[in-house]
Length: 455
Ligand SMILES: *Cc1c(COP(=O)(O)O)cnc(C)c1O
Image (cartoon, rainbow, N blue to C red; front, side, top):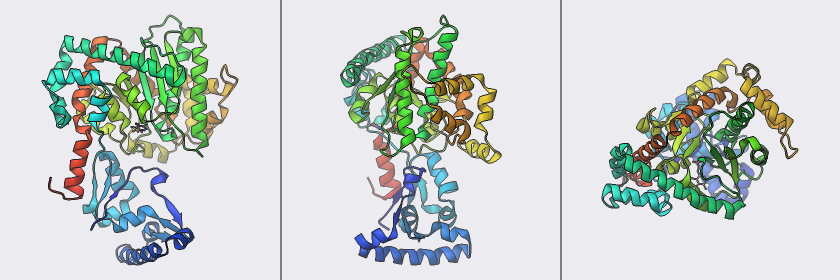
């Protein structure tokens, strides 16, 4: 009655197990208590499931390991996900056995971010505009007030101020880029960002595919209509995660290759920031114009980078995943750019049998990207290992399945924002609708729905 469980991801790191002998040795008393909880839990499971594989699957102690998530399910009076979709996935997939026994314990609280830090403190220019338009800084304690900005999205004068703020913020970020990496940012280009931990499910490689395709297009037709853009990546890989480190290497090769390509000059740029961290995020968010939230549907529990970028007026291109789903409920097709398979479609395509090689063979754009990566870049490095993983290793995160939809969505987005008035309108609507993602709201929901604290 005093312990609640918040699950933060459906990836394997949430389903952590510990060797039984280690716990026995280091935490002998805790081990005794775990054994007693497991004994009672096992009785409860047998009573409800009989002689069924669901008993073994949900045991806390099994085959010499302690299953921490199962301990949480047994012991906690509430189990919550961190977005609406993630809450549903816990109920219907990850924890469906236990949900069937005690549905009243399961809920969700959508994550939030502190708008004092992620707007007022890091983006004083936009904070100033918000205060001017709302007639004061009351939004600092009442983030839902931001919605009153919505009508100003149609005001030409306000739109111009929004674009001027982005221009100045990009100039500031350009100074950061020089200091952090000696990088010369093209401040005239759209700043299109994907900043988050490096993980295959987050699909930095999908964005890399798009960039290679754009470079190819510039080669095929150097005079094509092309809205100049800079793709900014910030990401760290876990120490032992080899594929993640290879993806960083690929992004750096792309950066160098494109920087040395005369046909990309003043049009296409890639910037991989070193040492992505909160202080770097604080420098970047105010300048960002496009937010890449392109995880394989069903894999991103919530995301919070998506919220920080929205709050700073970036336009989201993304999948229906995590808190993007709720973002879309507030923004609609007019103000957010969705693509790709939905979570249930990802599962059904996999069940039907998904052949990434066949997708590549049928799509010349994908085929060209794979060939380019296999052949290698100006720095002499090639990435045939990553290509093999995609084409012959099952493409676990469905990059090839989503590429065409992603490409078309990105084109639709860039056509829309090639009009500066529309770019500013989108930015203002995003700021206006972001109040629901304030941490204040999330904290209140935990107090009310989980801890039953009267505020
Ligand atoms: C917000 C933040 C994240 C989380 O980003 P997601 O896109 O939600 O994964 C990661 N790293 C840093 C430094 C952040 O500020």
